[in-house]
Each structure stands twice: as C-alpha cells, then as structure tokens.
Length: 249
Image 1 (spheres, rainbow, N blue to C red):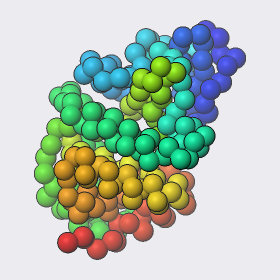
Image 2: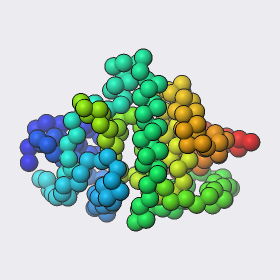
Image 3: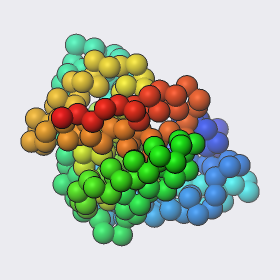
C-alpha cells in the first residue's frame, strides 16, 4: 500500500489515498472493537443502496488497524460552500434531501440510537439529578428505526465532477429517531459558529420532512448531553450549555 498521499488527518487516525482506494489508518487510542464496528457499519449501510464508498478490506498496515474503502473523486459540500457562498442555500437544500434519503432507509442490524445515547449520558460528569432528567426525557421520546448518520454535515458529503453525491464517515450510524439526527446536525453547525446556517438547515429539514420544529428542538438538550462526552473542552462547555435549555412549548 502507498501511504505517501495524505488526504486527511484526524485525532488518532490518518486517511491516505492509494489510486482508487482510501486507507484509513487508526493509531493508538482506538479499540479493535470500535474499528471493526465501523467497518461493519459501512458494510451494512452499503447494502441499503445508499450512495456510500464501497468497503474493500479491513487489514493491518505497519502494525496498525486500517479500513480500506473506495476513493470518491470530488469536492465536499463544505468546500463548495466556501468556494461559492452565493449557492450556499442551494447546497443546504441538497444536504437536507440527502439526509432524508438516508432516514428513509431501515437497517435492523445497526445499533440503536437510544441505547447509545443512554450510555453516553451516563458517562457525562453531569450531576445525578440532571442525568436522571435526561434519561427520562430520552425514554419518553418515540421509538423509530430510521437510519441515522450521527455526523451528518457538509464535510461528510462529496459531490463528484458529474454531480453525484456520496455520503462519507459512517462510524456513528445507528437506527432511531430521525429528529435526533437533525438535532445533531443543527448542533454541528452551531459548534462551528455558523448559527445562520444552523437555523436555515433546521427550517429546511422541518419543512421538507413535515416535522414540527419544536419536536426537533426537544431533542437538542438530550443530543447535546450525549455528545458532550467527546471532543475538546470548549465544545463540551458549549454543548453542556444546551442541556439546561428550557423545553420548547
């Protein structure tokens, strides 16, 4: 494998391009189980027919675990938004259409969103009363089985030169409530300081999916708490500021 062409560097992992393949190499800090689960997630989502890179192999590279998948030529939506801000609303609309395409699928073997969120809320440093309230709110939310990407944002969508869209990074995918996934996307925009896009995204999602905005907003404290166990300290502080948000009526 040729590891000379680095195309992305993330915390404890590096992505290389080798011809028509991508090689994601996991460094110290990743468990074998999490890496194998990410590969399994991609394989399962691929079987739904969604536009995703094909899983090619799970292997070892210089003593480290790696996932090999199809390289998709193109630009991310985030790149396109930066290059042509005048089309940002158009790209946001395309992004929502793709998210709804994902959420229209079911994949019964995926992990369940509620179970994952309950575990994460338990792992926070929030006081017992707040954790209890969040667990109670989560359990009261409707149970659904939609495919939920878990990190759906412009940087995880690639548009090829001929206009096809591919969705990347399925490490966080679960099955569950689509509005929880929308709340996560809203918070991702918000964490980046792009509150204008966050609000436009939420309006588009609710209109296109015929979902009450207040319903998505009810998920936000729950999603923020569950996401606060990872990331840097600044992000944790920002997410935890959402936990005490009064329920929208």
